[in-house]
Image (cartoon, rainbow, N blue to C red):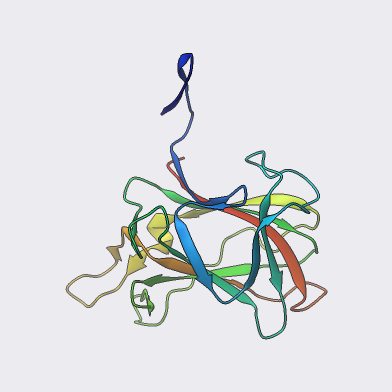
Length: 190
């Protein structure tokens, strides 16, 4: 992939990505249910790994510990085709130590993806708690996150239509459920 500007085609990029939201812009994401999010916040202490100074600021409070942005806007309403990508990438800056997360994917209609036990699928990224005051990149393999156990005929069926993933704080840090994060979210091949 390369960019075209006034002087012609630029150099090839090392990766192929589609932005969900970054740099204060919601590209593949239409809106969100739950969560207190300011998409164009400029108060993150440092620029993001993508080099942006404007990020989505997520404030976690007791009773409001999740955010679940859903696809739309620059994408087909409620279903972003992610077949060509391998990772959901979440760059997250934690203002406190000890925070951890879980992801719960859903299909259009707010139906949770199901695991083999037919319980709601929840993916917890490895690496444990986030360090304080720095950006951390969570690379979640879509092959592990977007799997549905429809029934015994279709075990472990991959899902390529992305509707939404609920990102939940485990409220494990020293501040309990009073946490602040800056976030950028995209899908990537590498």
